[in-house]
Length: 636
Image (cartoon, rainbow, N blue to C red; front, top):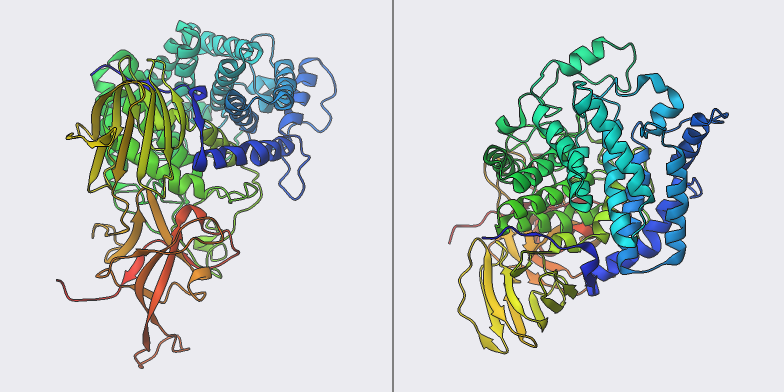
């Protein structure tokens, strides 16, 4: 099959569910985050992001930097991700004031770039002599990567090159240092690798591709690099362990990696670049490694919600089947990174399993990362929350029971904003003769191969998708793995089609009406007994959505509920949150009011109500569970 590529973001104009989210990001999240960057938002952590760039410019001009640098070592990346989200928004929703604000910030960033192309406010303001001497913790290359992505997106959205030219100079400086200058080392936090490949696709600049290949190829070859680097300096940022090589994905060359390991976000950013490079170069060894790592994540180390990274210790993967619910880390950025990785794998190897995972991550963990009003955000996304324990017990302090308004480490909110605004890149792809629908969403889509579609659907709640072919062509429809049955019609006539790697292919003409009906029945899900924390339990899903039980719908208590999986769950009424509900037969165990008791507690039959996981924690602090105790019943 001919290789496919993601749809350019400006070619999808959303409607309904995705449009609502994009309008929320456009009207609320982007302006709010802009105020955060400028320290104008009330009741939030201080950001200082823009002021850091202003102060870096002052430092380069020999002026007093005033209050100096404030924030995390990677604080620059918040500005980059905001610009990228704004660029995607401008591509679909023209806004002169937003464009003016971006241009103003770009001017400030340009002034913070050194004459040799170096760009990083932490080191420019604090100590220029320490540049590139702490790749383990310094995040210089990570910040450059995010700003490269922002520059490419803003150029593609507006045609303006100023930030792109800034980042080309920055890329050439990094190239001269690491490739021409032959300085050793590789990024402690992978990100620049995937960004350089975006720059290569955007500009055709060969140095960007060569630099990406360099960082991929040298990673893990010199196993002692970080240890020597630390020994050569007398300062640190966090005191990271330079010999914990698995945590940094550097315990072996990338083509030899077997299992997803270490910091989850760093891992999937690296794996994304590996898949992108394998697709670009047809590197069989790199592809084999990307395949192994994908299987490691999705078969043994991923939550049902598409969350990854189970441990608060290092925000990391641990071992196979270690997937606790109440202490799950599941950083929002990690699920977004899984989406990036899935999209890259789908280009490398056309198989619907990649879109299955991207869809799972987006509609569940990613969207759960933001409150429905767009004003509060989760960094950590557990599958169980118990007020009084969550956020308070030493083992559960990271699983806060309500979304904060902002963070000192604020990587997730702008990352989510840019992903929602570029949703079309994950929902649609194409090659020269086929238009692929990866994730179903309402709206108008214009493919570069000439196909144009007008899609109407209530997805992810309604499983009927209606497509009007404005301009025909060859169409590939993904059949999700969760759909046990489906029907395809063209102009009202049912088609006999058989999926190939999870897609059905039909050739359509201008004006044809295509219908796809998927299986929208609520279903009980049962875990492997190898996952000890949830063995013997059950979770509800409908279509791509995972559901959870909240105390707000269940008399304040979900811990005392046991669901009857012998009975099918039914679709209930819409909630005040704008979501549907699922109603399950269940039994409630009464509390004997003693810590331990010889008296068997009373049990009563009840109807338990579940809502989509992404909508939890929008009605105050209350209990929540995804995996529920099963009420014992004889096997049929």
